[in-house]
Figure 1 (tube, rainbow, N blue to C red):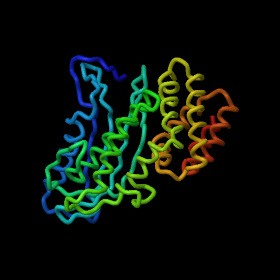
Figure 2 (cartoon, rainbow, N blue to C red):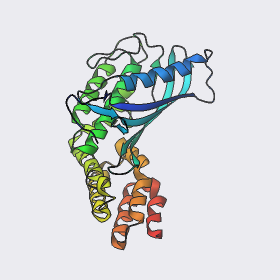
Figure 3 (tube, rainbow, N blue to C red):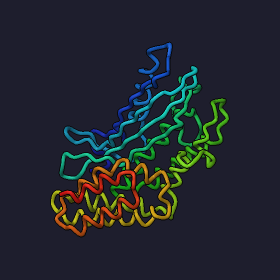
Figure 4 (cartoon, rainbow, N blue to C red):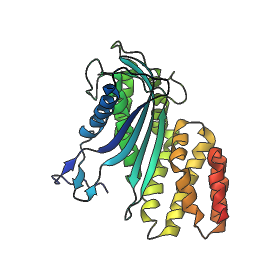
Length: 301
């Protein structure tokens, strides 16, 4: 758990992110070292930089850094411009166990950048440096914000505010790099702009409040109080359902269900309450039809 201890030993950066850069099937890069260099520099950018003013301990067996995995697939290359897709999965430990759970699974289909960046791979919280810097900074703040939402109700707000600043200056940049519409409200339903709007829209606030209930009141007490934990998780999902029925096509729901559907099914599969099982199945198949078969399996035990 995150301990905000002033002067604590072995202070660490917030992220422990593994980055994997690969080439799409039709992509050829003449310089074979550039993919490995991209991968190493992106990982260093995320992990070596201090993103908050909080203390994350890394001492002996205790490592409070937020784990995440970033998979970048280059789909087009005309050096120095690269087109890519990216999947980002962040995880969180469950209190008192060795279990780690996926918090979110985000897909960005326009993860496009210049490499090497025209102004080096550096970052400013208040001004544009390069599109790659903005992309990495944006997702670093989203990962931290989502993690903080699981530990404190709406605890991620400051990091979404920083992501909003990055979005704003990246949308209006005039550095000569190819314009990236995903920073703008015209970028489509799966744009970064839309994802951030989901996380800051008051109407969708039950989603963020639900993260806290799901984790701190549910998963973190599951070992000691499984029935209470299931009730808390069900309450969190019920709150999510109330906004999903109105705004179910928003990207945040897809990214959440992609990360959580297996876990939700496993949580309730071992419940002894037949009515609770049926309630979960009815609710989840209604708001996440893509994973309906997983939820139906809850009734098989």
